[in-house]
Length: 462
Image 1 (spheres, rainbow, N blue to C red):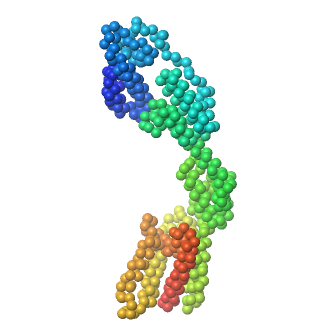
Image 2 (image 1 turned 60 degrees about the vertical axis):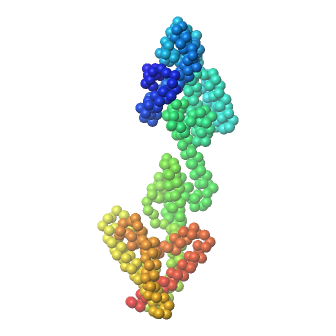
Image 3 (image 1 turned 180 degrees about the vertical axis):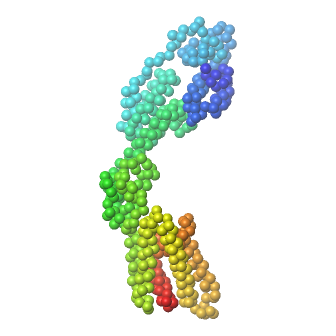
């Protein structure tokens, strides 16, 4: 099957007709679904364009050539005729018109494999100098070689590049621009087949993967103390994760963050980490954290000043402190220990949900009662809209702490926990800036006033 048959048209010099035929056949031979058919179609298209160009140049001499049975016996014309069944411009070319041996194309190589390897290696040693040398080498091949030899040159260079362990995306882009590969274009597989393109990009990824691992090794030596400790544990050969990891605030979170960062970019690097440590951080762990230490200090300070206030002794202070510790620390620990025991988990969540609802109702109703009772009497200041305004503020606070995408039984408990951890969330929202800590202190004074009044109100009813 010659090139005209592949395109599905008769021999013609109309380039527009040739392009339409190519576009029509391209729908059936797409590079992603039929790479071999596409390659054959592309080669036929390029060859037919050359034939059309030669036919157009010799169009005025064609009639005379038909009468005299002569054609232009140039090496290019002979090559085209031989590849298309002995036809050139619709004229049968026979041995009486030319001697094929006289115009036989040279099949001897224009370069050696060692030369290609030398030029490709030079790219990695000195990029700019190597690019210039490769471009000159390509010009020499283009000047002396046939289309087939030129195409083979592109493939040889691409194959050698795909074997270089330090290949980068920038270097590949530079080579593609110098040699006209057009790897960012849809038809780039004409010069560099798809399998070579895949090998090139795989090598680039391998280079980036090794650079990422070297960065991990560098951070393990020169990072901050927490970062160094986390990476040393992740890259260690321990059989178990040591217990003291739980006693360093933020260490487990740092190890988890380092693992997630590697997994997001190069998942295969995670396989080089310590499996025992990976298993440890993949499960929920109860450990010291900066959040827990700050909240312990915050609420301990508030309770220290509130404690003497209740008129019925320290009992209410003990109850308030126990509830704070339960929701901040113990609640999650119990849930982790009950994992896998469904009926105990359901019983605990039901009791916790009911108790948390009672706490929220008592808290918001108590605060509303305290604020209303401290307002001036009717006619001496604010009108009767004050309770409605205060209730609206409490509703907005409840809406802010109420979780949205969790199971129903967990929502009241999480809302109470969010309310008790709000001092830390205030610092985190302000990004722990200098102004964040005075505001946290002011918030602590506000919590002291509210908690003090609530405990007085509870003591009055009890």
